[in-house]
Length: 331
View 1: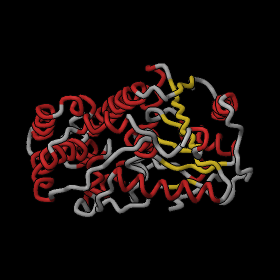
View 2 (view 1 turned 45 degrees about the horizontal axis):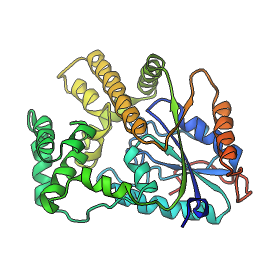
View 3 (view 1 turned 90 degrees about the vertical axis):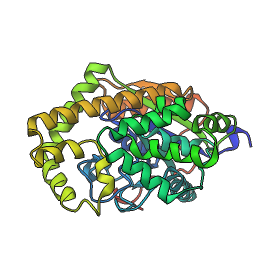
């Protein structure tokens, strides 16, 4: 199937705190669309502040999907995300609306837009052993070194704090003998199911960092410490929480292992580092069209994206339906 014959998927991507949510909502209001989140932490319930879950006001009445669909105690993989999100996209199109992906998880965006194969092979004992290694002192670094020994390309792409994906990459190699980096190269030769248009919001680095610091301050003001206190009190139910930036730093302060001021500084630094990794991921993708976002309202950015789509001969929205319903965790 030629690209022009495939269903269109518009994606608003970019680093954390870049304004993706506001831009995607504005774009949906312009195109008659609905948002499909591509955020690996916002799929979980009960962690709204840690994951910067968009509020109803931020959604602006635009239906949002793939938010809060999983319990933090369950394993939710990129393959599971792809299957659920594709079903959502099909439903959106069947109602005559335009699906608009929105998020900063590059793996989820690739899962939707590339013919990625996800190994179904798993060894629960091996997986548990790798995760246990990561919990030991210096374990995250050792686990990352294990990956670097067998798949240096994947190790360069994944940060040592991304324990679940580092562990999974090691597990897949041990079970199949195939490096994830090699699998990715093979996948890149194929075509996905959509005529995707990926736009990423670009900011001067200093300005982005200031936005990140303001976001962390806002999270603190709206109850981040209390949320971490609640999650850490029931850690067995919320194992995924430890993967969210801010959890382990604030939890350490609550346990008296560091001061809260030091914890907040670490949260801001970890978030800046995360933004760097996101930028690296999207800059590697030749499909990405970068949109300057500094000092521009979301509506203006959305208008520029719409102009790009028209210039590509895509038009506005084939369905012709306006946005219906109330924003929320629709799935």
